[in-house]
Length: 391
Image (cartoon, rainbow, N blue to C red; front, side):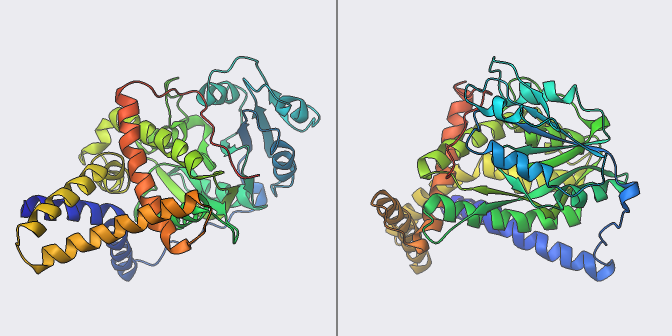
């Protein structure tokens, strides 16, 4: 029982905190022997040609703002193209886009899912670089320039931008929890990038070299993750660029955020099974270390170790094995009671920010368990399952 408890606690602690500390100290040691990498300086003439691809499904509430935001991006004249694909949209999204001649609109009434739409859009991309971004996110003016400067390095195959969640004072647990989570994720991605490579990119904003892009299977759930990791699996690095960011509103509520997280978890299991070669360190040892530490543990065993830690701690505490086990169990009970209290307060629309983190933490890990079940019961579709966002 004691061995199982300490192994469980170690895996949980390493997954959510320990890897971050370890990565931080590795980077510090690396900088002691080698200066922090300098950001590339590239003239406008040397920036590559680029296409911004936006896959939009029923985004009439955001699309006008998205178009305005896209057309205001700062990039050398004649080097940036726009392709918006709206397959399956049944609202006014396609009609709104059609009013802007600067944008190439692709639309079919059939809904085949986001990745099918992306594959179709890629047939029209003839530039050196392609940037993907969601229809309900807004980029900073210099985003494309900041991203594309990294392609002066021939070892770089993809560049991931930063996701930022818009949070106001009245934020609920979904907004505050999601915002905190992405701030921590951003720090990990900065260190991952400096060590070797980011472990996958998020669909809110990422880019790839057009000649390295590979179509992923039509049933792929996390297309953005798979597209970027297939490039890493070719021996190229994925760089993180925090000065290129996509701003989006939080999920409308915790239920919508949970729906999104379950889908991501199901896609995570699918991705792990399809990237089996990266689980072994023989080909790319540093990338495999980052991949297992940052992604695989979260998407597979850690939620089960959380349950095992509680059960084994309960047994050791009540067996009278020592004060330390009683104290540990009391800490676990308090944490989960705070999460439960957060749930109750959220239901009553009472905002207590101190409760958001334990509540969101539990929601995230429940989502992984639900996602694993969904994937193996074959109930997860690759077709858009869009979570409602705050407007």
